[in-house]
Length: 87
Image 1 (cartoon, rainbow, N blue to C red):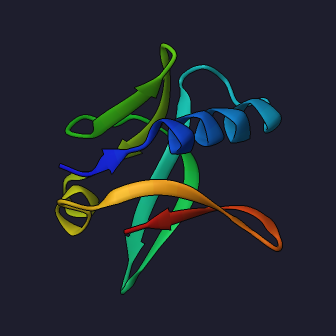
Image 2: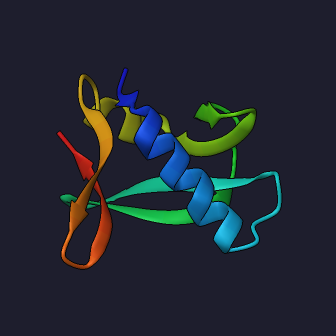
């Protein structure tokens, strides 16, 4: 199972708040060929959900869960601002 750091959880919650996303919307990571792309979406049957402070912030389907197995989702500062990283 992937790990979502506290920093990444807070950052994803902030992104959802800034987008004024409804409470039932979370960030979904979508596997597109060799890239993982974020989008906003509802949880679907079979998804694994991650929460921060009681809010669902991230949903992953089985394929993305498998691709992220053993990895950590975190945030790093960059010259363009905070950036989600997978290590």
